[in-house]
Length: 207
Image (cartoon, rainbow, N blue to C red):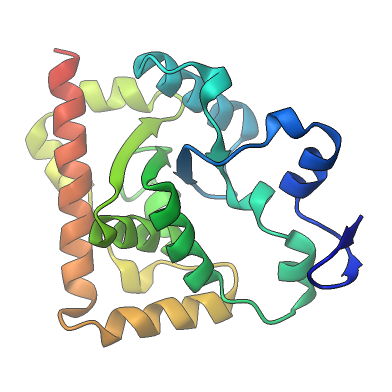
């Protein structure tokens, strides 16, 4: 397929699906914050569990996932792109972010080690959009078996040591962070507190 905007072969998976099965593509109801290192089976199961837990009809849920919605041909070709700006606009437009966590333990977490995910959460928080999370694998049992004191020690955010696959994105994001009035430490504190508050509410509903 030809990308009509660029005039070159290669489109996003979303566009390819829409061309063949348009009923499966609609405006997203949730923006998924996740990492490419997740196992597909666990990732999908976490989303199914989330829909069941939130009493959502899966057929009515349309997710924005970077892997499907970004044109990977363009991103991998080295063509200029502003992923940071595109992301910010997308989050505000959808207005609902769901973070897919592998674990709350920062020392083991893929999620908290990735710069994009931490920055996504901070941007969503600053924009005032709804933020929630779902858990993969055995993470729910781990969370319910922990104490609030242990949880507080586990959730550690260090945005300046987090990494992005694309170094251009990493440099731009960290440049934006250092340019903010309060800097990286404020982001670390706000994101960590957000997850602690969400985890606390999650645990209370299951006691």
